Image 1 (cartoon, rainbow, N blue to C red):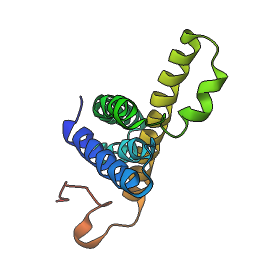
Image 2: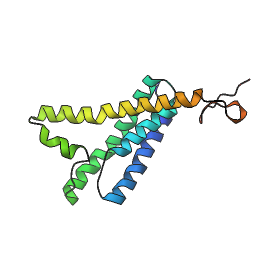
Image 3: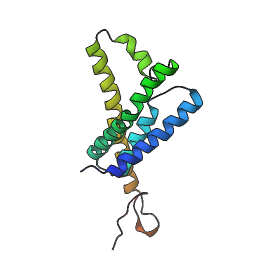
Image 4: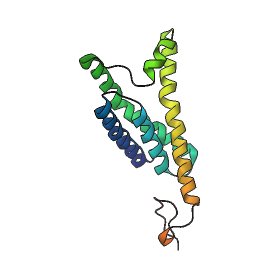
Length: 144
């Protein structure tokens, strides 16, 4: 089952971090989406499959906002492609290759960092119990 709070938190982190990067550099990267995906994976729990799913959903929701923004920047301000794509675009010869390359480059890294976020949560859960017997940072279950 999808935990939408984790997806929204990942989206929020992606939007905030990407806004900071844009204000500092004037360029759009995909780093914010990766950070948001990892955070969503962490929040959802220690299952890597859940982390992958929620990392992907977080990235897709961020992409729904980012892509029209990139188009507007390209039309109005003469913006360039986001960071990794400006170097990958010359490698594609056909529209099919470009579509496949962009879709894989946008989804697979976010799935991978979502899994890493979940594995980080699992590692935090294995750490020694903190004050009050709480495992990890976000464990809400009380031990009896």
